[in-house]
Image (cartoon, rainbow, N blue to C red; front, side, top):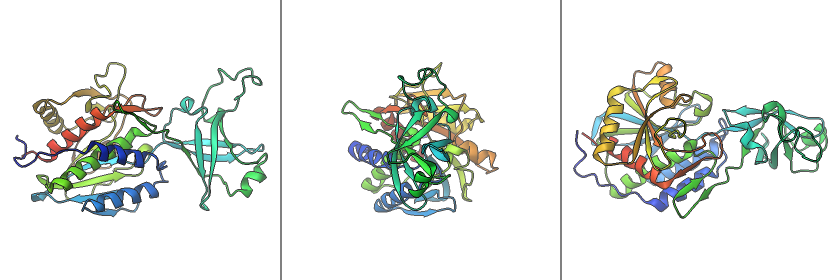
Length: 352
């Protein structure tokens, strides 16, 4: 195994961070992903790559390689966690249901946006149903879950009829404000770094390839998926793809080795072990490049590769990603982890 002789990619930090800022601020809970998808398509085509969508809204980016007889895929997802209007309460507040698995206690007090199917957007706040310390005896210790949280709309409404006149209906999307902050010391704070920071890392690699006018060793199909958070984003893999490398957030905590400055290589998650040879190759490359990396097992995690394998696709699969703290809550990573991830992606697609 050796790195491509002509491959000496330079990653543009400012491009990656600016791209991440743009993507993170586009609301895209699972199923409500069209605006984010269009932004990604425009960016990929501006870099010179052809794209197409499948029926569910996944974006596919074609990257021609030196060997056109083999195609491998990279996948990351741009859908996020969120909420949906379950029902409209008699006092004008909204009962909610989860999209994916957000940590509901972390949403208490968060600002949100309600998107109607008629194209309107209203602001609001997610709150406990016992939201006032001066009113409710259980305000401090009431469980924060779907049954005991609601959305207060920032409009003059005090009845279900008032809310319906705004055009808000059951099934409308509720997107949580990500609160994006990119600090000068390299920290990146935002909701939904899972998995928009990995999408940003892949786009950083594509930007570097395009700028250097370089090709990977074989054809690469970038699969950016729109339903990963609900389990089926990457179920379909186009014919001719032999292996899929998922780029998704690395877990931090418990007995895991990963930090916010590492690229994580996952050996096994709740769906089982990943391909032994692919994972071994990734570890060997990380060592050869002297990357800051960790090899870990994720006990409560499934990726698009897991979905693809369980759907019966004849592929090999592995998983890497930048270390992200506080997953499904108020997340944080560091640019160093993104850079390490980009270097490992580039090395993987450019080795012989």
